[in-house]
Length: 238
Length: 345
Image (cartoon, rainbow over all chains, first blue to last red; front, side, top):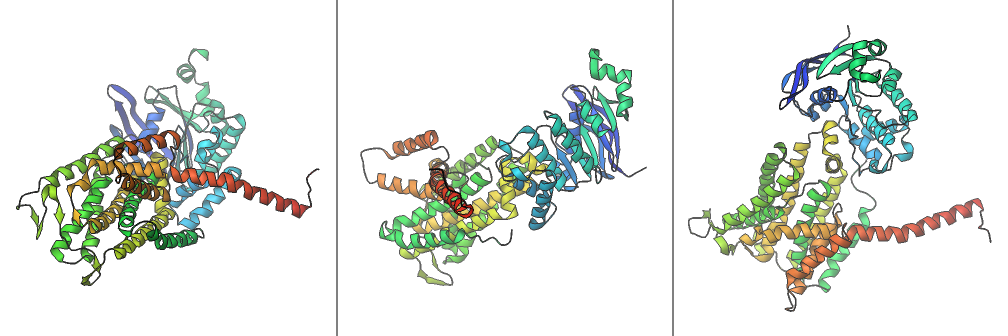
């Protein structure tokens, strides 16, 4: 059993009368790749936001590498070495791509070394041609890739990605799954995703959320052939 | 990223030095002194708003606080060196406290504006109501609406009898502005400055990178207040009196207008906006045909409508479109000359 990098115990999030995440017990080992799926409103994104500190949970506990991080601010969680990509690309739209990635690296390294690391990541993610452009003017697929670059350059040991494949072309998705597979060499990765094809392409263990709770947890193929999952996730079209 | 000095700094320095030498031939040094002070005040807001994204409606509070601190300390000490330093430290400390309250409380921009505005008004009312003899700090009577006159003005450090005034004060203010300008330039090149600009662009992303946005904004806010405080102290030396009018709403609004007209997100813009508009106001004050405020309002409206980015960015883009094209043509010619390419007849 590898080291547990992320664990939640009884994680609960209430918005008024709505229970968006209900007593979620979740465990993730080092180097593991896990996809969170579920219909809209199943609580995946709420779970994601609780773990990343964007919403403090109303109940339960969160542990990262054994340290309790319940109620921490996002910057404290990120400072531990957790890379986070939000659902809507969150970039510094007015600055250059290089400056974006440099800033992410600067948090953990001196300025000059951060610049080297940024150049390295820009090469690896094939962003050289747009390194001087401002992300605000770039296409959605490029923006997603830049945000992955931001995450990767900080050498995280836990990566949380909220819908990295949303709105991307097939070619972009291929490239994206390559980058993510690269990341799993050094980090545990959690992906919140709708795109089943993408999930199959990174082939991993899947946690299915339904009505705020974990419905089942298994390999993607077994999950997709499960009749209960097909019912909740794919509805009547299944 | 080696060193903070860049090639392009040298021409700026040279032009600034020539400007400091030439300007007194055109405008009286008495007027120039206050233009320099306003330039510095404009730059203080230009730094935190234009680069840090913190729209402070109460920059005048720090300006006034600097001026009052100087006046009160100068009366008590009978010299000017320590009061000058205090005039930087007190507003900075006050801003650090106020900023910590705002940023750690995670109040949004609107509330930041309201709070800073209200703080300015509170200081205005407070200083206005200190007329009685019971309101003293040390030997300094606060003087209420009439303010504090007759304090010890700037002297050569360590020699309280040798005052710096007139042309001397102009040079001190001009060089102080130059130093502050290069300090801001340098600050913006450090990692702290670059990350501050990142915070302006996207706070969420910066905190997801692991930076403590609250602390960084508080520090930047405090630096802006320190600069405004220095400007306030120099203003006190120029006016030789401080009054609650320093904390007025009009003063605060004017600083914002300077930044908008001069150009946000630039270092020159707020300085040029401040000095330019203040000089215009001075010239307009010498005639009685049109009311000053109407012209100022008109200028603001015209700028917001036609030059929303301000003077400096407009001039820069004009420069690029004229000289940028010429440079590109020259490069093309050189390349053609190298490769032996000739255009078709």
